[in-house]
Length: 210
Image 1 (tube, helix red, strand yellow):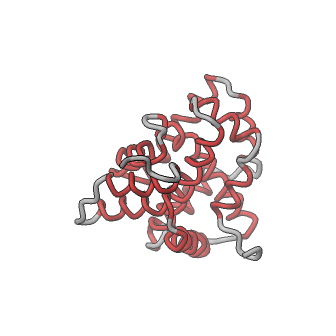
Image 2 (cartoon, one colour):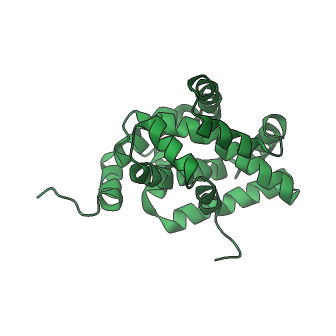
Image 3 (tube, helix red, strand yellow):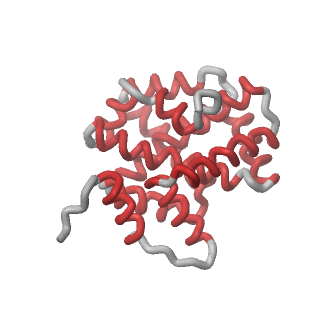
């Protein structure tokens, strides 16, 4: 377990402390609720990226985007620093980038991803804002891993494929959201009621309805 920490766990550790507090402040949520939402949003983002990179063309596209747009060695530190700066103007620019990245990750499923995350975590419309904050952070994190590991497109696809499999094995809210999106991308129609059951069990502890 120590030898192969998941990407989700690694990135979650980097977001603890001041970054988490600042995210909570920007979302108007408590740190505990933001932590829970991160626990669903990061597996959703990294799992979907793993799914996209399971095809050679998808892996090549992602590899090219990381090389082109996220080559700075300290991109992640700079992003976390600007998040902590909390300046309205800077956040706006980052969110524009984040929205574009989300469009590439989720394609036509972006609104469903945001709605599902919002309902299951109680963030509502702010779930989209959280995903927009996280998207450039996730990409910079992957670029750092790619550069430090000397990965090519195939290696990147393999690492993300392992993360996708790990998210599916671990279950939980992030896996439920990811599974729902993938089902809806195919023929199945999965409603949000299943996600609410997952969310109620995970985030609410015990369900209070009779």
